[in-house]
View (tube, rainbow, N blue to C red):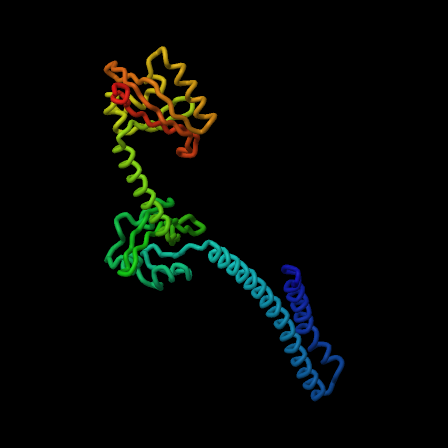
Amino acid sequence: MYPKNRIPLSIVTAYAIFGAAWIFLSDTLLIHLFDVTTKIIWLEIAKGLAYVALTSFGLYLLVRYHIRKLLAIQDTIEGERARYEAMILAIGDGISVHDTEFRIIYQNHILKEMVGDFKGEHCFAAYGGKTEPCEDCPLKEAFADGKIHKAERYICDGESDHWYHLTASPIRDSQGTIIAGIEIVRDITVQKGMEERLAHSERKFRMLFDNAPDAIFIHLPDGGLLEANEMASQWLGYSRQQLMELQPRDLSPQDQSSGISEKMDEVLMHGSLVFETTTVASDGRIIPTEVKARVIQFEGQQAVLSYFRDITERRLA
């Protein structure tokens, strides 16, 4: 590569000096050196040919310099383009670029596999069969306030259901004007399925938990209550909110509260324990109780699952 500006400047300077000298001095010298007209004519022809050759060579050097410069710029652009394309491929999500009229001007191959090739079409028409942008369109919101917006979309293609997570961002020019928008599309169908199964499992757990015949408490080893079922509220006469403010030792007579703490220590030591105690209801009733306690993991932390069963009838038998 030629040093920047050095070669063109040298060529132009040399060409200007030589051309000026040639024009102003050559004819005068020829007249003094030669008195034969024929010789002067041939020398003029030779001079013209030499001047044309020199001019052509100078232009060749200039053109070659600029061509090399353009090729270097092109190589840089191609390198950057290849790097950006590699980055886009590595993302693994669908990507589309839209102009400010919501016309799709680019889709990567992943998005084409997801929804089809709709380059050149309006996204609201291609994806939703609509005549204008959706009200909750994240791209529309990004164009409006220049911020990043997200949304979820459910699409049924007649054969299967799909959930997509959309992230839309504005693209600005060097003056900060929004000229386009980019949208990243992630297929979250599997995630949504897992969330639905988890929600179903939680509903099932809650149904079994609240309809169990025994009072059930889930509490921390130090006594802080995490969960209590509906039977616990009915059995003891406390609202759920009142129960959540109590600890297991608060449900025992005052002279037995220290004994409950000792039993909890045994549960933690052995992992589980069955013992009998007495429980005090909200109205002051003393209820003979069998407790089955077990150490569990609940919401990422160690806890104790305790079943409280009324054994009044057993005691009376």
